[in-house]
Image (cartoon, rainbow, N blue to C red):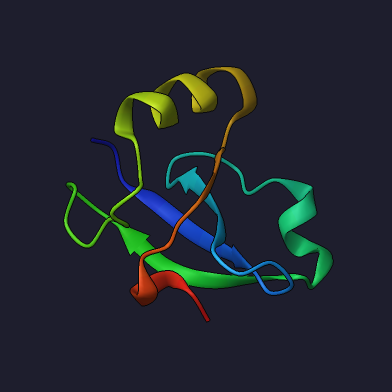
Length: 76
């Protein structure tokens, strides 16, 4: 698994955006509605519902991976 920066949408519980560390952060993240949620590295500390294969595919097409989690560690 690659390393990601994780961002959380403040208005929707559990909605996250994972952006590879080597990629530019999408413009919508800077809207003030997202907060930094930490780093995901080597699979440790990843949300329970984070799907690495889906993330790889999403990043290839979009540059980021949006997903919703119920993992209490990642819900503000």
